[in-house]
Length: 293
Image (cartoon, rainbow, N blue to C red; front, side):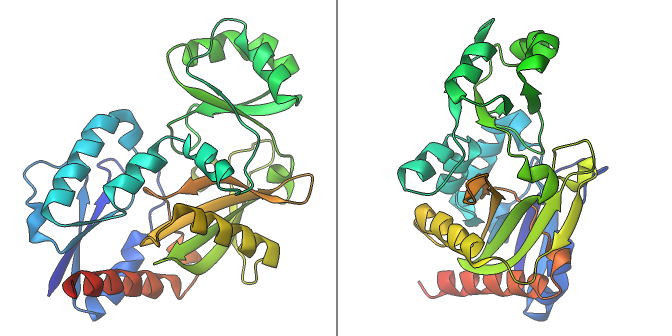
């Protein structure tokens, strides 16, 4: 029986993780799965035919160690997704690459750090009265602030302290997030798998279920949304074991990329009855590809 490792985090309290749904269909295909915290000591990664990055949702606090661990894994066995993709996707500056490839993205203002009084200048440059500011590297909406020009007076000092030594990005807030919601398209082995829409709870803008958002499956996504997803996948350049593309429909009707999640996205396998088997099949295909080399 082949052995596969799913990388997770040590403290899973309060998190919704459904990767274990793929374990039974993998077992049916002759693969045993061990779920291992990514920062575990003494693991012989060579014992596994594949290591799959899954719910490593604390990596941003230990980025150098995380990358070193992945490098060790990749020297021993097949890592999915591969380290070069992780490095590219770890910092949200990948949005600039998508933009250069012609993929519709939100207008974004970038800074290496936030200087005192710099928020007003960023708002002027962005040309919008409401925006979201967030770190260039973060997860689960950590460090994100929704603000308008009035809130700058109330929150400006707090935000300036937070970003005083931290790279940041500012994007216009999209009101469709709180109404229509944010769409997530999932791709397995480069092929479209399933789709969900995430609507924040009243009074919030964060779309993670840990923050109370309502998650719904979409059985027949809009053709324009599927086209936007295909364009984002094409910009990556190679089919990946897994990928998630998050979109919002902007005021001009265009679906624009919010995030391209290629490191440790929740795949929401529970939202589509066939998704766990599709994920298992994608893993088996990658293993067969490696065996055929």
